[in-house]
Length: 159
Image 1: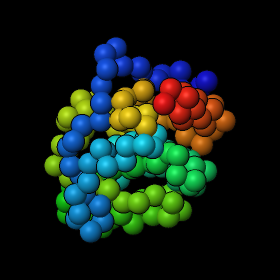
Image 2: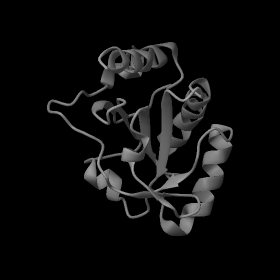
Image 3: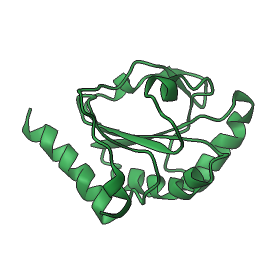
Image 4: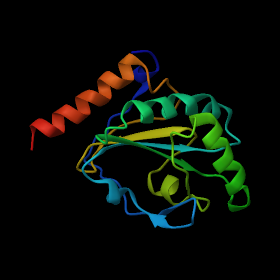
């Protein structure tokens, strides 16, 4: 399983917080808006070399799951003044596959107790945290997609 061997699984039930972040137009959003989809939430920044290396695989993952069962949400923690730079970098790195979201006040990383970047948190369709990775991986690898397919199937069969 390579880098996925470092996945951490919650010891207690944990759900996506209501902490707001904004899109490229400054419109606020929360993770609660995406209930019904498996979420791959990536917290990143342009000043983080591992984040930059990982982003193309997240773009490919988003393209792979464009049917709507899974949504990749990349949230930049860059300063507000660097918003345009971060937006352009995300477009370049993801091949335009990822929408730009921004949390310059670091509310979401703080709420989620993120201690480093990149951190990726996977939520099931009910908003329940399934796992997190505080490192990089190739998110479009066969192993990663297989794990995400299992998350999609497990909640679907329990409905």
